[in-house]
Length: 471
Image (tube, rainbow, N blue to C red; front, side, top):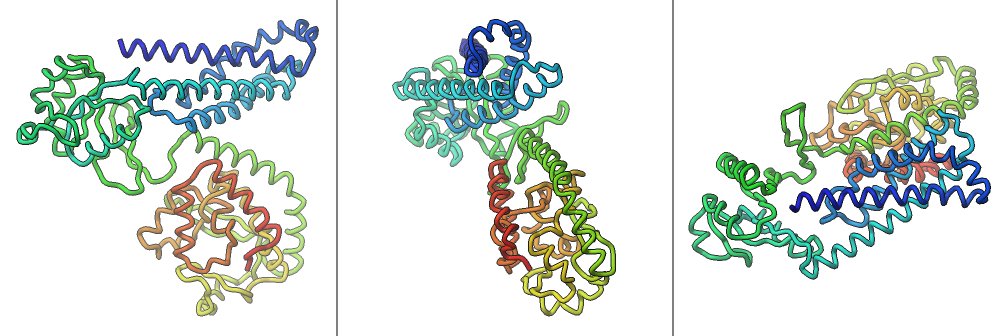
């Protein structure tokens, strides 16, 4: 019955959202045109309505809008709506362009999507508020039987006690230790029995879900119990998978074909956001190479005229997880700069394997100017286009530097390198401690989001324009 209620609730939400999308689509048209024009173009609009509804429905469903609302936060809902809106505008606008539906303006599409986003957000916020109010009053709750009495079980109990709005009620505990059963209560809840007593507990209590919060040593003994509860009794079973202590890695349950896997990942792994990041890299790298092509030409001429050697400097760098690629920059040093490096190592101002030196004598006059305003980095848009790099990410190191990394520093290779990063956005060479640089890269990886990328790009602009921290 609970499963049927959940399915019905999900269908009602989908229907409600699609009604909002439909109404706001025509409302967006009326904001741009008069009623007479609306009736004249009504036939064209009816043709594209199914695609509009499918776009909204699929994206909202894919991003998890219709997953359980029991623990969903308002911020989660708003983020899903924002993702759907921006991706939906791009997809639906492309669809209208392909079918050459010129009667629907881009501004109208924007109006309708923003109106739909606004009303869907309001609807979901009110729903979350109302559901939380109900649960705090003891209505619409779910009864959990908790198997396990250790610290992790205590942590779960503390969570549900601190979040009454989730509507989760623990009816008692189960442990395989008969002495704890004899003790009567733990953490304020009654220990109802052992694993063998679970069938009787389920028959004598209202149990909506059984949660196993048990140590790894129990995994063999609970297999048959889990099978009985889910397949015979038909009750939902969950197993807490925080079986290993990890401070940075996030555990998730995945499949490789039919093989279930418990995966630990300390780098960003949200496929949709990473896909959007890659699409933005492609789009902006193409635009950048087209727009700044005159700068490329002027820089190439000045480099060639001012000193002997090639226009471009090519160097092997490390990309994602140590993959090698050829990085391209405008040459800023004399042609034999690499052979002269050993003579200058004693003047290195950076602590660690990276070489940084103020007033490096190997720099040409044109090279100093190119470096000051990061013009020498512009060819790396080609690397971004190829997929070797991203617009934002840790700077790509040379293999010789990576060989000298301490173990904790290697995690910076877990994300695709970028043209700009936190280190560059915060003043580039004002930071002389290599460890501090590495910590900034790991801070970026641990807190990555598309919004974080956008903020770094904004902070990079004045740093580049005014040559802040350049050497």
